[in-house]
Image (cartoon, rainbow, N blue to C red; front, top):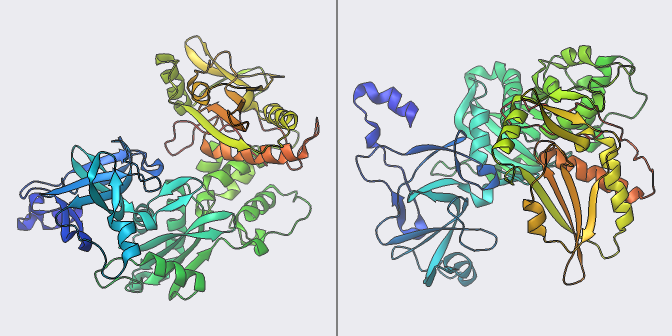
Length: 533
């Protein structure tokens, strides 16, 4: 909208002439729209990846106006069907006189789509639109299509956001002519992109591929399985101009796209062959990166950054532990060659001995300051719960968690004020806070942490009324985030299976004391403090 106004403003075009609206055939077209002569509402929101709606720097959305005359718009959880809260993204539901009665000759589809009910509207039936959005100040904001939603590692990604990032990454790429969709990659659920390139600039295809991959990984922190550049007009679309993402996915998987240039993360069969660790630092780094990307070490360009090579944040976390390099160094290095020069030698001591103090990054200082304002707030508690099998060995589980604490300095860290400045201290010989009982799960989640006394991880095995047991983890965001928590859980599973006292998991070793306790370089509040090898 802004680009169009800038282009045609000199000719007398006014922003008030735009009429953002929302509708579909099932509702006899119109559902919502603004009044004529009113400029569109453009607002920024964050938290949409977690289906939360918070005002702030993030995705910019254009409002589609309030519900039309005689229509009711509601937002519901697409899985439970219950009405969503005011600060949650959900499925858009529509009710009113202009909504069709159903699909001709398709009773099952009609029942599923046209007969949704909500507790607040007992006398109404609603149409499930299949679109995602939310209401703010009575105005509808559409975030995406439910069927197109990409979920990777528990985070929601809207394909149009990925497509916009991809198109803006290089001037040779065509705006509004890309398709993002989920695929199974070498390391699990991943994302592939098909993007049109200007036919006059196909000589820049390799450069555009690098820019696209780097921009998407950096902006969205997701792994890419593959990218295909096609000529203008080759992207499958409907007659009305909508991108056919599912058809793109099928053509991508069949290798049937008319490609100008391609990039692939490879498959498990392409992994670097095992062998002795190279003595040359650069060769060692190439081998580590190759193993994560499903490539041969010789195919890893040492003159590209980790993001340009396609390494996402979780893989970068793992690389930080494997190399002993700080996460910020990995993220900010211009290429692998620069990283190789900074690799510590095996004889180098950890940068932060246990028991010493160390200053906090800006992101960590922010979290520490918020804690000082309200030490009882659970806003930065990360919690997860899982039902334990009936035959779970609690002693082995206890030992496994103690092994995590012994191995990861972040889990033995407390935070203190020295001369008015916050510092961290890593303790020796800390004992994991592991308890078994009949405690209330909500009470444990909301119980405040003491940043000075610690520990900042608590583990509870809760006995349920039905005789079952639930494992609950609560950890403060100052020492971990969801990415590092996933690494910790994976490592925990390995150690719990091993089960014997004092057992050392194959492939794991103590992390550097300061590793990961610096902020992520691209705007995160705090970075993970847990790394796995």
